[in-house]
Length: 166
Image (tube, rainbow, N blue to C red; front, side, top):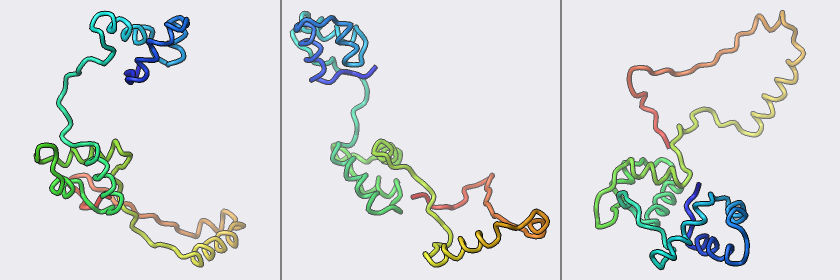
């Protein structure tokens, strides 16, 4: 179940006061009954509906830096995470790691991929290939047996293959 935002916590307080049962409120807000009931209980006990502080290490970058990282990598697709980490300073002027950059880019929806290596076909070349396929679509199995189609793939088991990921 998701945590309730500040607005949702106030809605969880207001809807039962308006006369809706807690089970109906929990269905509307797509949350568990106890999740709806807790802000009410916390308001009576501690006079606040804010969520209690959570444990965990604070993030070393701000949201603005995260957006800048994503924008820089969108503008320069060949920029590596380690180069970006060297250029970016986190909160309190501390260094950030390349894994931090990768995590921030992942939350932005960016993933490392291998760049396309191959012939970039023009519109004329695509048209000619389509014509070739249509001309040879009627070949029978005996004729096709005399043709060899090949495909090459690289497999690297022992070591890094040196390909750049963008």
